Image (cartoon, rainbow, N blue to C red):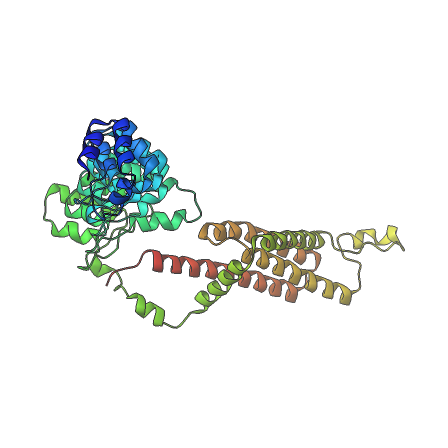
Length: 428
């Protein structure tokens, strides 16, 4: 780097900087062409020279993503030197800088977690929520780093943050983050167990998304690791805590299967049904989905109302004499009513099932649907059986209702099984 540019950068003189640029207009471009170099932005960030750093970001934003010969970006240096104000200003200009991998794949977000900068951790999460997805070259996420460095405030912040996410993939992201394994197959819970981090174990087991029974590459669960640590009182307390939360030893769990074995296994009926339903959902546009849901709701309302108030009435002839006998009965040709009730029931069942197929993907939606659909089916069944106390009809309607409910349940279980299988894989 030009000596005059070094001096201008060190003293933070913007006028001197432009004098150098005036003499050599290509000087910043030349610096940018070098793969690893300590740019003027690196120097300004390390010294906390905010005006010069902002000017360099204005002239050459690419400098912010360049690593020096030590594998550090300007943001890494600013964090390391405690230049909080400059860090926040760089964050405003480019929030994605917190995900920039430096030496050993360590991002600025990993760095603030390791240093215990709780306020910066929060600022980084607000500016760039996706930063929790990143892992270093050892496969360690911010959660691993927090446990390894006894950063319990940061650990609690990370866990509560990911549990509060409400985006479309929030559930899968939470499960992936808290159960992410490093290159040795250890989750954050494994690491906490190896190092006897009582508070870390306590925080992790309280998180519902944490899988307590994941095997690492040695085939050990967190409970196995704690049992192997000895008979110290801390170990026994940790062991009891994990066991009460549902943790088990590796020997008591089914042998984990490889993904290859799972994919080669014949597709079951539940998986097939779930796949068909998922494909139908994915192929349906939002506009079509909304229109079909409206149509399904109208059909359900109409058919249900027909079950409560079927067509027909009391004959007018000899009404005074026959009124007592006629009350509560349907005055309609038996054949016509037989056809009507079957067609009406088919429309009702079909509309409810169509509404289920149009639901957004997600286990929560399925269970909400079941909690609403089951009472509706029971109510419809009771209404039809009172109107037409035909034994065959009663049992056939019951069978259809039960089959539909079971089918919905099987689909929900199939989806849950696939979710667990691919989001919480076991290492063999």
